Amino acid sequence: MARYLITGGCGFIGGHLAHALVREGHRVTVLDDLSSGQEDNLPPGADLERGCVTDGARLSVIARQCDGLVHLAAIASVEAAAANPDRAEAVNLGGTRNAVAAARTHGIPLVYASSAAVYGDAGSDPVAETAKCAPLSAYGEHKLKSESAVLTLGPRATIIRPFNVYGPRQHPASPYSGVIARFVSACLAGETITINGEGHQSRDFIYVGDIVRLFLAAMSRDPEAALTVNGCTGQAISILELTRAIAAACGAGLRLRHGPARPGDILHSRGDPQHALDTLGFQAEVRLGDGLTETVAWLRGEDQ
Ligand SMILES: NC(=O)c1ccc[n+]([C@@H]2O[C@H](COP(=O)([O-])OP(=O)(O)OC[C@H]3O[C@@H](n4cnc5c(N)ncnc54)[C@H](O)[C@@H]3O)[C@@H](O)[C@H]2O)c1
Image (cartoon, rainbow, N blue to C red; front, top):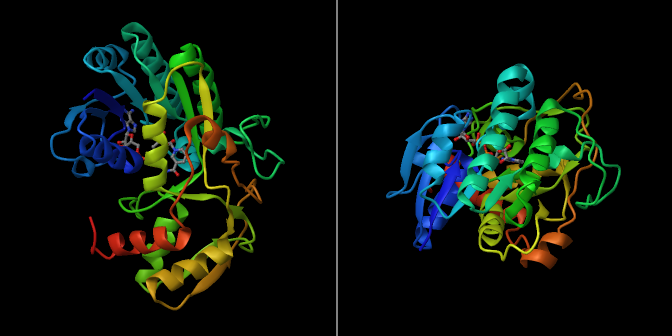
């Protein structure tokens, strides 16, 4: 049994990770300011320290008791980060520097949730970890600079670049939420779904249960060298096709309208999953239709 510190553990991914660790018999401490997360995302037995990752001294004191650190806390959307750039830099970059300092001080491994946003429009399909990184947003830039800070830890550093994560407990009303939560919620309410542009843009959606397995694999790996891996399925679906799959999962008709295309929207984004398979033996398993069924059930209140 080990004790892990999860920053941002009350969030969508962090809550699922905390549940998985507790199920495996580990102890979990969470540092979270509850700015977008919720305490009831935590499993019974997890310890919550309510606080901010910009407080490096506090983070370090908490990390002292722990065998590993998973750093997820962030202003977790491009739009929200752009709306408040100074705060986003302090949290998304400054918070990571504090996590790195704490991991270094206490000699513990760090798994960092970066983002596929570091690639920008990589121009390759699928995008491998070796692709040139040219972020198109402040959010992506902070993630990339954070990666550099994390890599200074050497072999104890693992960086995960999730693509689009979806699943139960992703709240549709939150500005941080992904497109699937918002579309499913709209479809269940019989509302019209608005697609930006034609809907031919495609994305690689990974189920939250799969991304949690990737984090668990990263946390238990032998630290021979620093590692950076995509968190992806290697499959992409267009937003238009996605709306049809969502309507099918909801058992509802589809009401669509097309809004203006978002400036700078990348046309295709699909990760290459090979490196995660080679290094961590990780492969996404949950098919989109099955993941959507779980998501719909949760949003209907059928499943916790
Ligand atoms: N969900 C995705 O599709 C996705 C994709 C790529 C990367 N990521 C990254 O994964 C991580 C988790 O994402 P998520 O979807 O679970 O987001 P989320 O918003 O649900 O969770 C973030 C958590 O961090 C907490 N937090 C925010 N600022 C904080 C601060 N200053 N101090 C302490 N806690 C703070 C929030 O309260 C929340 O509980 C983030 O770093 C995000 O950038 C997510």
